Image 1: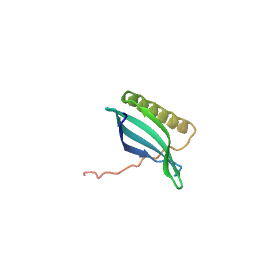
Image 2: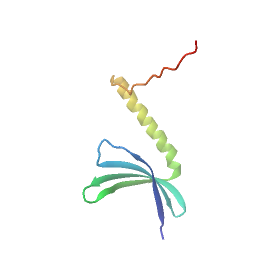
Image 3: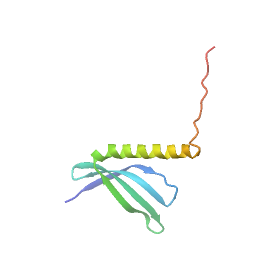
Image 4: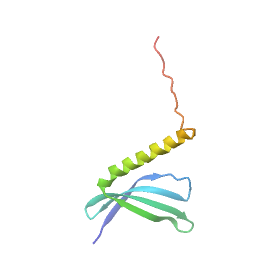
Length: 97
C-alpha cells in the first residue's frame, strides 16, 4: 500500500496567471522527497496538475547549482546585449560628525 502526505513548500509566480509552479514536499513510504508540480487553471475544474517531476534529496544540490548557472548565463547575455539588469537601490545611512 502506497501512502503519501504532501505539503506545498513554495509557489512560484508565472507571467501567465492561469499557470503556477509549486515546490512540493512529499512523504511517501517512509521517505521524504521533493517534487516540482506544474498546474494550470481550468474554468469549472480549478487548478489541475499537468506535470510532476519527483526529485530525490540527492538531486536538490545539483538542481540548485544548475539553476544558479542558468541565472548567471542569462544575466551575462543581458549585460552583453546592453539590456538593463535590475537596478540596485542605494540606501543612505546617517553619518556621524
